[in-house]
Image 1 (cartoon, rainbow, N blue to C red):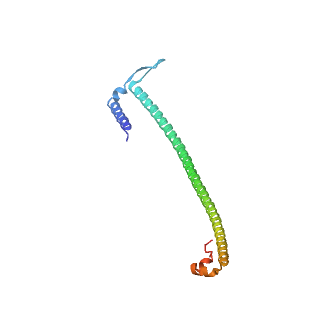
Image 2 (image 1 turned 180 degrees about the horizontal axis):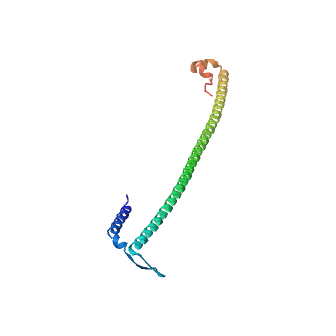
Image 3 (image 1 turned 45 degrees about the vertical axis):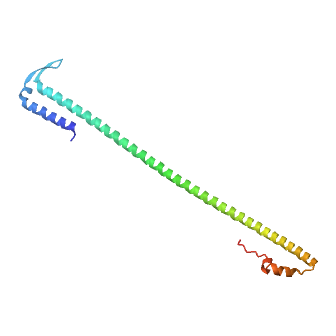
Length: 181
């Protein structure tokens, strides 16, 4: 029980005790002036009735204020719930948007990596073709130099194969192509 309710109960008990103790005096008849006319009646009971009417009016006013406060609180609670739901939906949509953005970045990254891999493969193939071409050119150049040397040796009267057999192994003369594509 709240402190305010306890005070009111104690007050009503004290007033009830006072009225019980002084009931004879409160119910004694006196002349009452109403402004326009005069009436004979118990002044104490009239005053007690007015006090009771005032208490009933104040209690009605308090109940009305409490009711309006409860209704307002209920409306605020409903509005807060609506706002919370909107905030939750907005947060969920932000998470969805963030997930979409992450997926998009991931897809773009894979595409870039694939393009880079294709570029690297084509570049590597180009370089390999260039190396093969240069090796062929070098082989042809060496073969032409060898042919020229053979011609000089023949011009001097030496057999060309005899000089090669002593210095260069036979498998070194032939250029082998062994590289993966």
